[in-house]
Image (cartoon, rainbow over all chains, first blue to last red; front, side, top):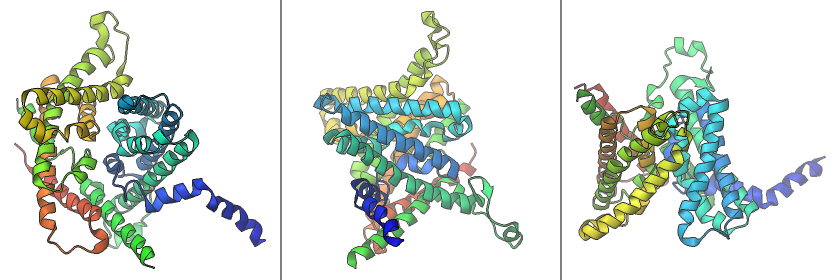
Amino acid sequence: MEPTLTKPFAAIRRSRAYKMIRDAFWEANPVSKQILGICSALAVTVQLKTALVMSVALTLVVAFSCLVISSIRSLIPRNIRIIVEISIIATLVILADEVLKAFFYDISKQLSVFVGLIITNCIVLGRTEGFALANPPLPSFLDGLANGIGYSSILIGVAFVRELLGAGKLFGFSVIPVAFYQAGYENMGLMLLAPGAFIVIGLFVWLQHTLLKKRIIR
Amino acid sequence: MENLISIGINSVFVGNILLAYFLGMCSFLAISKNIKTASGLGLAVIFVLAITTPVNWLIYHFLLAPGAMAWAGLPAVNLSFLKLVLFIAVIAAMVQALEMIIDRYSPGLYAALGVFLPLITVNCAILGTSLFMIERDYRFSEAVVFGIGSGIGWCLAIVAMAAIQQKLRYADIPEGLQGFGINMITTGLMAIGFMLFAGISI
């Protein structure tokens, strides 16, 4: 029984895509290790719902802008490449923004300007500039996807802590039992304010750096 | 007038573009190593914001907003979805133009700001200010004050951060927390400080 189960996993584990996603998720996480794209990462993390929508939007924008730019990379003149990249990214962001407005109007109101700010998110420009311009479309698409997922992991992690401690809810549902509140437990208002996000992400990075270092020493 | 003062104060302190809305973090973390470069970048940001925010206001209200093309005989046209592309193009063009103008007329200032100017194009604080101005329906005079105020707020935050970082060199920080981690926590504490201005009414 066991070999048949582990075999496909082993095959997946050896594949390039798995390795890329793992690296972007943990060892070279765009937010916590490369310090990219924090701007929009924090403002939408008061609730898990907005963080999740933002993550999906950003992941799709990164992946598809890498795909598009990589497939026309031989046509882009070297000295105007930044403006070409930004217009492609902006087009995709407008697309994402319009889709959100059409189908998820409430969430799009909550995300306010932060969907638009994906354009200036350094992850997107960083990946297109650093990877997609020099690699064929499929690996570029995977690279964009992997970095998007790495970014999402931090965003959702921070949102999880902030919503749980700040409002006692997850995805808008109360998870802290009423008995806790009667026993004197109180929600931590600081988590809902801007400073909470900075402190949570600082602690996250501390944890991750410590764990990574331990593994390298071993 | 009172309204303008309150928008100005609010954008510098309570609604600080960096500490309350998290915009412009990338360059904030990268360039806050010493006070001199930090204040150079801060000044450049004030400069660019003071110009791009009013220009983007004009573009939005005379070209893009629903019904804005009435002066050209096209009252039914709504191009507001184009604002993202157009704003970023205006910012990039403005930064480029500024760079050339400063280079031509003030080589001293150019030497001081030169390296930072291109970085500003991708600073989210600039695009963010323009988008917030549209979202909050500011009038032209309010947009001007808001642009300058946001710039001053950002500049204040980065200079203060640079000063703190210089002092932090002598602190004994746990190993995993060094660098990015401690910077984020310091920023969090600074944000708490800036939020206290919310209690002050003028």
